[in-house]
Length: 419
Image (cartoon, rainbow, N blue to C red):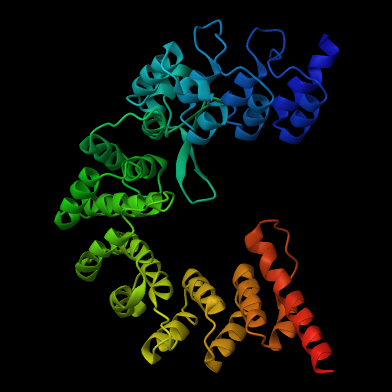
C-alpha cells in the first residue's frame, strides 16, 4: 500500500472517525499502518487519544496489540499506561491469558503503573506544574473514572481497576484485604477501582469470601460495610450465571442486616441484593423505606413488593401508588416498571400508569403506555402520542413502542372472533 493509500486511514484515526476507519479496514487498509512516516502504528495514536471505538476497530481488524515498539513497549502496555479500563479491554488479546512472557510482562507493568499517581506522572511527562484538568468518564452501567489532561497529554485514574481486572482475568487471587484496600483508595462504589475490586471478589463464589464480607457487616465504618455489601451483592449476581446456583438463597442472610442498617449507601446495596430474594420477608423489610429520605433507597422498594396469589396486599398497593407519585424521577421510573409488569385487576394500577404517561422522562412515559397496553386498557392509544419521537435503538426503548400495536391487533382478533 503506497503513501496515498495509507493517508486516508491515518487521517481517519487522527480525526477519531470510527465509522470511516471500519470502512477503510473493510476495503483492505492495513490495521498496522504506521502513523505518518514513523514506525509506531496508528493503534498507538488511538490509544494516546483514549479513543476506544477506533482502537477496538483496529484490533478487530487484526492490529497487533503485542507488537514491540521502538521504545520497548507494546500497544497493550501503552493502553495500560493510559489508565482507561475500557480502552485496555478494547485492545486486550486473549493470547495473554496463556502462561508466557506476554502474560508476565503485562502483570508486572500493570502492578508498576498501579503504584503511580496519574497527575504526578503527567507533571513528570510534561514538565508542567499543573493542576491537570479533570473530566468524568462514565459507561453505560454508571461506572466512572477520571480523565486527567495536562500539556496536551491525557491519563486516566483507572490503573488500580486495570490491575484488578487483569488479575481476575488471569485467575489470580489477591487477598480480600488487598482488594478491600484498593477500593478504599477510591471511596465511591461507582468508581471503576471500587467496582472492579468488589466484582473480582464476588466472582470467586466461595465460602471464604462470603464469610469475610459478612464479618464486616457490623464494622463501625460505613465504607467498610458498603464494600462488604457490594461484595455480597456481586456474589449473588455472579451466581446467577451458573447452572447450579449456590448463593441465591444465601441472599436471605442480608435481611437482618438491612433491617438495622442506617447508612443510605449501604442500604442501597443491601436492598438491591434482597430483590433477588423476593417474598414476604423481603417485602417486610422494604415497606418501611417507602418514605426514606434517600431516593436511591426508595427506588428499590417497588421490586421488593410481593404479589402473592391474591395480588398485592392493600398496604403494598398503597406503597406502590405512593412511589409512582414520588418527587424523584428515578423512584417514579422504578414504580412504573413494577406497575407495568403487575397484572392484578386493581383499577388504581391503570390510573397510576395513565398519570405516568405525563412523566417528565420519556422512557417512563413509554413504559407507562406499554403497561396500559399490556393491561388491554384502551387509554393506551391516546397516551401513546405523549411518548414523542424516540431516537434510540435498544430493546428497552423499542419494545414499549410495539405494545400499543399488539394491543390493537388483539382487539381486531377479538372483534373477528366475536363477529
